[in-house]
Length: 338
Ligand code: PMP
Image (cartoon, rainbow, N blue to C red; front, side, top):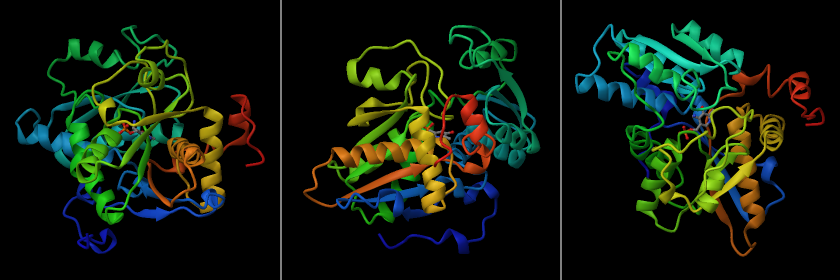
């Protein structure tokens, strides 16, 4: 348990090598009323491009280069809420690749600007199109690939190397940082790669560790886990979480429970994190914290539970949205008091 490297003192050959050993911090004021739980958050926004997805960018691209599928000059294409895109853009710079990203036009402007700054070519799609439409978020990549079969599509939603990334890195880091003493891991589900991969590793170390996913209202995962049925997807504002259809990387066999979160609940806890912990994180972090607090409330106060959660990206990307009262009011959410 004691071989934890101090990332801050290390020198890396390449920027992408620094995407590891993110800080784990204990939460205080946001959870202070719950005496039967200690909550630890893994700050994935301390990765070089600012999110948990730097890890898969590195793993997927290095694998494709190693097996000869990708070579300098080739084009990588992916659909992403912005964070995987940043990880892939980093790798494109590192390996002289071109990077084309299909992204919803409503994605926070700061993310789109950051992507353009690092050279990604953006294909904006209308998020209101139904999933079966050829220009929808989920289908547009395939529409482009039918014209450009030579492009490399990592397919973060269905490529199990996504989960392997977290099995090999995020899971072991959590295990070591927590000295193997963990009762629960709670995290948002986007592709499901982070939670499924880390959960597989953690349950192998200690099968008593319980895994709880967090899913936005409007996504299909919650109802599928609870009832086995697929609901009609509906739009929501939390970026990076949920989906309109089932995807391979979300491996439900590692999930013990799932908690549903609304836009308002997620954004309220995102803002509380900033105010009460000085952790300026994105909306999926607030969603995860909401999940943690719902879980704690459901636990008997018979012991001290150690709960780990993951904060995937930084609030800097959402200053004009979640942290902007007027933007929230336009969406019918009043969080002026938070
Ligand atoms: N939060 C944010 C902001 C994300 O971009 C993502 C990735 N879609 C996640 C959470 C979820 O991570 P994963 O895809 O590994 O489930």
